[in-house]
Length: 293
Image (tube, rainbow, N blue to C red; front, side, top):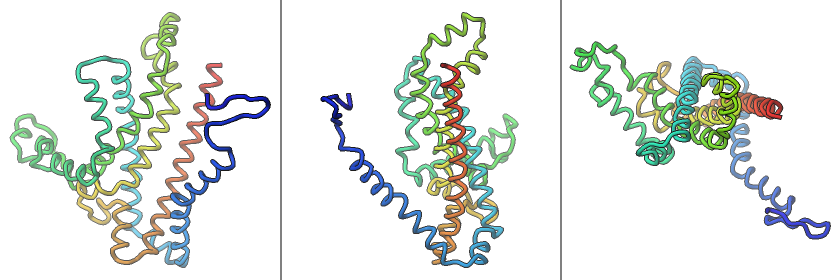
């Protein structure tokens, strides 16, 4: 028990509310709020015309489309297949399960630069996987596979963002799925529901908040990814240049105000999207609670 009653006074293991709240606000301010405030302060040195020319240039708009588009679809794909991976790890026993479970966390431990170099090598035209889609390979001539170039293209950016986002979905859905009582599925089956109806009407509503949380985490992680993407994309402006790379380019050119302006745009849009997803998660959680009660 975190608390014990002694007369009318409660004793807690941790210090009181005021002290812990003070530490929380201090830590949050030093780590999050002050750096974010510094970003806005640096951006405020620009005039509105300068700010708009930095954040609405054709190069910047192209980088937004690639960054947000690739991040969204990568998180969406991970939400689908991450749910399947979590389902297999929770519901089935098989040889090598612990190894598969450990491999899910590999993108967490692997340095992003190493991941980018590895993916670029694998999906290059002469790579282990890229050769299957190269027009000059024997595999392509034999199996009549479509010609698809992955490395140094937008598709390569999508592959890299999908790679680094999978663990967020699996690790948020897995414990919730493990806590779902199997008796609920048995009760649904006894009432005549088939497997699809049981999953869609009984299990999926309970997984929705965790799935939305994992999606939001994967999406946010992909938006800020730099190391793995910079090696697998050709970094061509207007084509395969992501916004974090454009920010780094401006920093190398000593255009600090322009770089922070782009960062502010990314921050505001990301916060709005994450807030929307959190509201949806709250609504889904409230709906599930009212339904079960």
